[in-house]
Length: 292
Image (tube, rainbow, N blue to C red):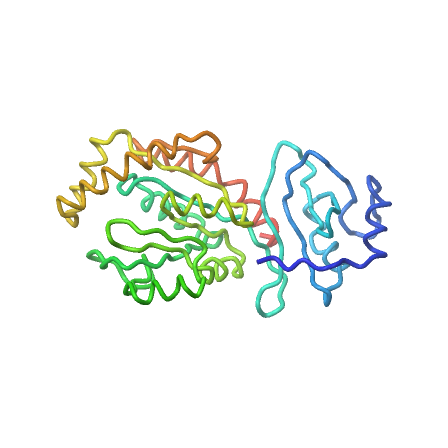
């Protein structure tokens, strides 16, 4: 979570009065853009110096807007909007916190394949938020890699302890994203990837994480069924449950404004190219913030 404190009053007034004037001291020019999207939100608590925050990234060529005691940095180009925040990690370091990337879609739509390719290409920029589940591991899956596999009693205790950002129950199994899993990825300065059910999308819409939402859909239910059967890990009952669930998920994916991008995965190369194009600006902004 971001820690937002009261900024130094003198600095706050200077920022407001210096609107649309450039500095000559190497700090970021003070330019207010009312209709732009924040690229970075620098926040502070009472123990941190805002002057240091202002000067950390002069190379980004950004402007500053001060509003409600939060400093928003805007890219000088209005055609490109990046969504990156900066905050303090658990050991007091200032880290870049890009907005999470949320992927949703029916089981068998190809989400895992696309995410693996994305993480293989940009392994230094993405971190996968490993979900918890009470289902049994499939062949080849490892605890702590695909999922944290736990028993229902432990999962329910975690719910009582308010440890999840979102969770759902499907086919007699729980699935959930823990706050710690997301925070660990964000503290590493990477874009956090969340693979969630539609209930998870609803819940994430209510948070202040400001994710980007992508929906992956199959070309047809017939092809989806073929993919599920080809796994060789699903019972007939499980396949029918997943197909019924898929109908609900596909309807959800069509809700206007629910997702930033919808990809029909009828060709893995084409689907990945679309996903890559959608997120590559975020990746480049992240690299720039690291001086890469």
